[in-house]
Image 1 (spheres, rainbow, N blue to C red):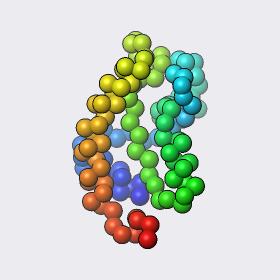
Image 2 (image 1 turned 90 degrees about the horizontal axis):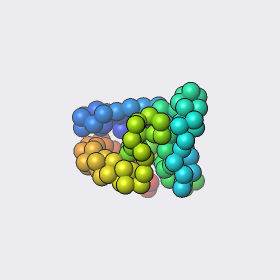
Image 3 (image 1 turned 45 degrees about the vertical axis):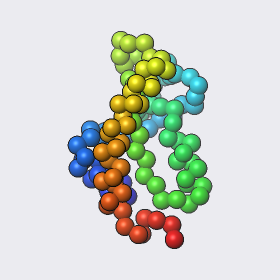
Image 4 (image 1 turned 180 degrees about the vertical axis):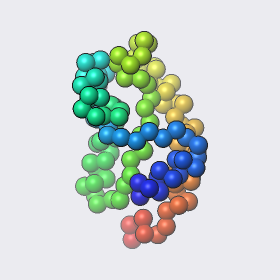
Length: 116
């Protein structure tokens, strides 16, 4: 399923970055030191979503692939202050990318990907 998702993203023209995701629980923004440690340990991105959803899907036995969007630079990776408003604006920008990817991805799935 990862290969199918990768192909859909490439076909859509959306930038694809792959790698380990490091989860931090809300409601905190990570500190620059925490971000640096996670990157030093190999994390491609750090965030506060995706993992709870992944666990819930896993527990139901669902086949799944995770597509996440980074809505803002991590602390210390930009000169700008990170706040909730910046994250919301970044999220709105990601909507158009997901709108390109999802129809292509769904069109590639056959009956074997759905629970019967």
